[in-house]
Image (cartoon, rainbow, N blue to C red; front, side):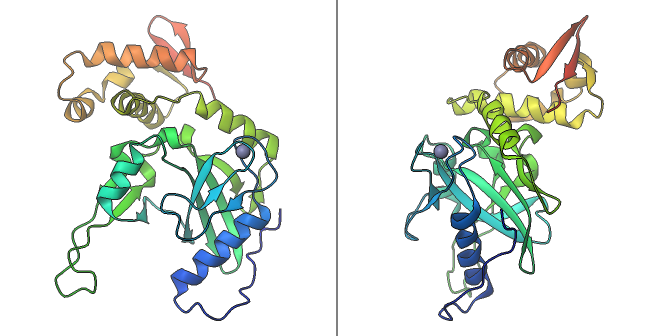
Length: 255
Ligand SMILES: [Zn+2]
């Protein structure tokens, strides 16, 4: 994998955001494989494809690419809020590549399987002012920090390409957490995020119950949060993300 971004041959692009979009997409077409099936390349869909940028012609998975200079930070600019929200909650939601670049180098690349997106991950931006060219337009941010660690699979980390086999393995493990129902998916992602916030690998049920108030705000209709937490921890155990140590203690399984 060549981590240098290609040079732009055409001079018909003027704006910096347009230029980086073109060269980052070109880089993806030249260098990136499909993290779902390992197919050697991804097909660049025509630029007017609304939902996605790339498709794997072997397994059919679709991907979108977002890139940011220097650091990803907590949030990434996305498109019109209501369209993005209905897409995120649909079954045709694409998987997401997040690229970090600097000058002409790809410094980092992660892939997020589509099953890690919930409405929480999308944040509405204030409407543009009446004086703006697109007055009233309501955009959105992808709250990258709201995505659980298990869903952010490194492909390039600290200027280094990760071993392809481990990327495919991590992707396959993450996809085991696939939940189609968006409400149930929300619960699973919320509990995963709670476990992310616990520093130790070994933790207790009480350590997760510390977040009860936060969870109650997100799920006001649920009146037995503790039982829900236990249920989700069981699900994470069944999928191989945590192990039960007995006596209400658990251990995270690191990959
Ligand atoms: Zn594929």
